[in-house]
Figure 1 (cartoon, one colour):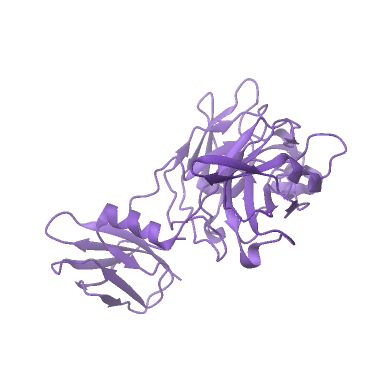
Figure 2: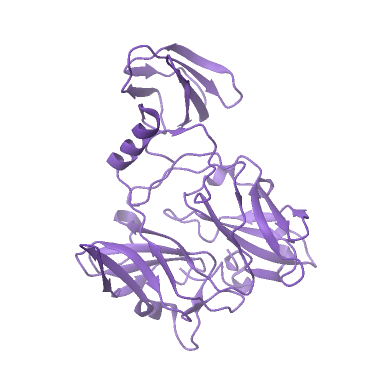
Length: 358
């Protein structure tokens, strides 16, 4: 998929949750909010945000996990410039990168500073922006998190070119390749189109390289074609014919450009991969408990209990929904969909988990 996210002629096109339960601690990892990209400075028409007569900045903000579109609002974001001024976007969009298997880039439109004298230096999440589960066919993990409180100072300056920020294996209905044995989806931190005059987006597969791992040695493979193109966003699908599992992808320098016509530097990214067993091991090492499914409907299961625990389930306003002694299965009462918090009490410290009810 091409540019941010590409140009205003593409308007919105211009610049642009978990298998197990995650602890209630709001996402604080810099890896969750990967980066922001000051893609365009006063180059987008104000009509895109119902502000006729003005010109807007464009800033894609990139996340490790897919976002819940229903939780997205311009008031979820603050942009801080180098003088310390804070700016709220005039509008925000997941489009055009809003297909199933995408939804990891939010395009912010508004006034965020000036490229030379007062550039943006920080992006904050100040509202209840939620992540969601991945779709069947995505290799990457996800967690259902409230991102409120996350901050990134990884704001790519206007004159820097685009770089890769995410890659995963795509299968099933998400796979748009017509040939090959495996498909790798890659995402850029801003929209991209071919840098070399005369090249088409369909030619770009020749400049990507995928790598398989043979006893610690990376073996290069060139894709046989590229898919998910010509839709003005920052995602591509690379079609490989090798039976060896691709674990990393790179792109040579000066191959693609962003909407500001800045070419990319050499860029590489590891392919995200996740299995239920690996999530379970990580979860158990942190809490000692296994609690599933998440999202849930009318029942949850608790494993690895010592027999002395009791629990309280609260809604997002802190009201108690149900409490009792922990057992293998807990029947949930009739409640609305949304976020809930399950606290397990034992003889030591209580542990709280976040659950989503569909």
